Image (tube, rainbow, N blue to C red; front, top):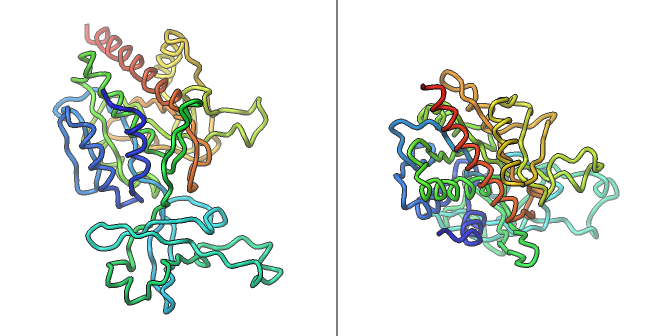
Length: 351
């Protein structure tokens, strides 16, 4: 049986900015060793038999990060975003920059001391072009010799921890390594119950820069149904209680609508029935904007029925956040029951 703590630790601590997800793919291959494994040129990965799947589990492997633009004469590194991350949230944090042979080197996002700031700087949020990475004494020439230069990926250097008493994870990249963990755990549970034959877990690259990987996985798997796991942003610290739609330890989030997708009513009904059977709480979300891979998957091929299951996570798209083991477990159990209902429904349709 897979150790859930080790699984989330391994997935979240590893490096995988958009377009540079190879380390995440290696971890998926290792934990999914009991399944057929395949990957493609976009660094998408697949667990399961691709010959005739009915259901696809979707999650994405990339995390928000940065890419190197250039190195200045002082050895400071200029960067651009890979995905949506707010510049004023990142100053003075430790990052990892990839050099040649895949080795990552630690540096610090530079922060101008208040002693040298003009008055107008104190009230102005920095732009990404203002931000540099200081590698701690390396010259421009030394960094270039290490293979650090234009095009090198950069990710947070956050370490994982787990509070046993509260069952709370603290790490980076919950969006969406929690989804990857859920897919792996669900495939294991399906196999134990002899229900994995018609299910493929697809791990898509480059979601944070436009859902590019899912365009390929949806066509390759060609499912009739998809369950999309997401690390969904917890809002309980930012809105009034009656507006909450995603709270840690509040249960899996079922998304009815966002900027990319309107949910399938049949699968919503299956999710509600599953929650009632399991006696777990679910949270219902109608999001004004944003989106998930469901936005791409549901329009693929001749149309795919999609259900988005969100695992609540505080402070996503930043350097560190919190999430709950209980929410992860309940999301897996909920999706398992939904799959059982899909299989029963399909049997009835084919009679």
